[in-house]
Image (cartoon, rainbow, N blue to C red):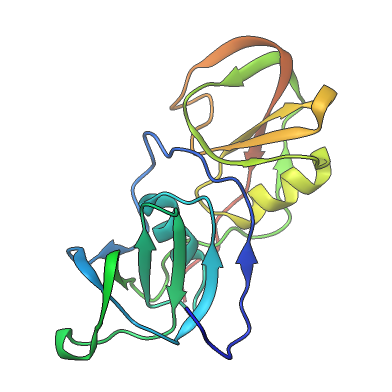
Amino acid sequence: MATASLFLILSINVVGLMAMTAPACTWTTPKYNVGVDGFDVGMVIYANQRSCQLACEENAACLSIQYHPGSKNCFLNKVKFSDDKLTEMKNFVYLEKNCSPCEPPRPQRPCTWAPAVKGRAIANNNVMELEETTLESCQQVCEQLYYCKSIDWKPLVSQCSLNAEDDTDGQLGTFKSFDWYKKDCSEAECN
């Protein structure tokens, strides 16, 4: 995708999104082998389709996505086009976002974190994995994502996994090398 626009490239290893909470926005039925060219406002690499949609929901300028399952590249678009304006793009999936004015919910700041639960983590519900990071940086990323409810922190290798669940909707497993932290943020009122 050649474009003169400034790209925000998120080089985060996005791993499988399992049982997610309800999405904040609705999405059109996928259209295959089409997309929009030259209207990108961002890009996510190592994505799956759902994480691509969530990245778009987090970006107010994003109105549609095109996702390439083979390369796992996700392009966030600042436009929506009717079928006759879409460009042929082999192996891409195109979807448009529809959000109500106050969606997705935005947490009020500051968030607080419960004390670490040593030797515990939530398995099979990681939405994002950050490597070579700090605990504080991991918490800051989680605070910015409405769907992130907790983190699994592996201090020996500075690795963090962001979870779409906490202990109310997921089960804490025993993992000696991890510490689990729960986020507490109140959501802003819709005006």
